[in-house]
Image (cartoon, rainbow, N blue to C red; front, top):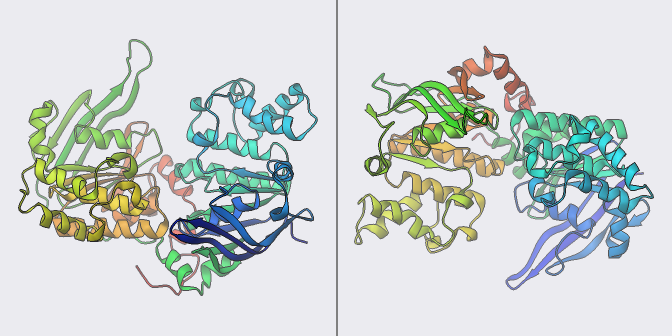
Length: 541
């Protein structure tokens, strides 16, 4: 008998604008020791389906309209709040997507870990503390006794996620719901977390529901998969059947959107490099006080006119700092930056202003980089007016032209950022960056937080704009699959230094450095990325 059996689950949200069928009659089961993955784009109903079983959706406007979810001979949908509290954390635990917002910043790690034990068991505080310390060691956190007294901000993203896994395991539940647990992590840290989760699952014989939009991750860990679209499960089966014999057009679309090819390198004419960096250093802190961080350390590189140069490495490797330093958004400590042959290393803000038209940036999080008080019109008009590209008479036409070029509907011109999806907001940010018709753009992780299909659209948009506007781009990312698809050449960065460079083919087929090999080994779903899982009947992108 299945550990969890869900039948015809329906969850609707009743809003002023009508009824949203977030989950519309889905059925699935999870066995002990099984990893059951639910995949689909944002808004498909993945998380709502799982959270609703534990009473974690807002009521109102959310309402469970029908179905059953049987766990340990109980229908979870019929339990009272007090009964559900006994199930949550004890029988079924959740690993949330963002550990920094899930952990209480005002409580030390140890206090948060022992809370479920004190709530659900008869353990004394001393016994709970000992068990929590042992569990921190089990999930790979060294100096566990010391770290129990640390605050959440003192942990890295990967370490915080390990804490969340420990918190989910501490009451020895039967099922863990892992909701996008590796989305914000580097490829190597992601690989460690997925391996850890699998090892703990096997060791403890736990059922895992793994919610994700990342097919590469799911290809590595899932036993069975359900594909959700607009509240419905449109396809369900074993991992191999989904990846090798997908029959539903939506599943085929998801698989076709995974970047799985190398870009044919752009033919360069050998002219003067548009950007040249010589022994660039960016240091933070003070060597005298012993807190100096060498974010960028003696880096030299050339960005040839017309190419897309990929820059990869883990968080903290210095990628983003290097990109910002090249644009003089961060002041260099030493070295030289040449832009179109001009030394811009020591230029003041007023001297840099006329150059800003020709060098732009696309930031990682468009929700943070777009002004929430400015409409799309205002956002796109600002650089046009600032650099005298348009006047009052021509402004409307130029703004609409930009919206057309990045695939935004003109009728949305007076909307604000919060009224758009993540992919649409990134299109606005890209439109702002290309508004001045720059020669050079630094794109800093522009697709890291997007669904695979939206990511594919943005990548293709960038390629199209590079060709249409004759752009040169430094593309910063920790996702080697994306960089492989987009870049002519790839630079690998570690601890502030460049450790390897080459074409995408060279880097992937014959890496020279152990660090590069470790990055490649950590790529989730390598067989999917390299086209080895099997052919899919979907359209080629």
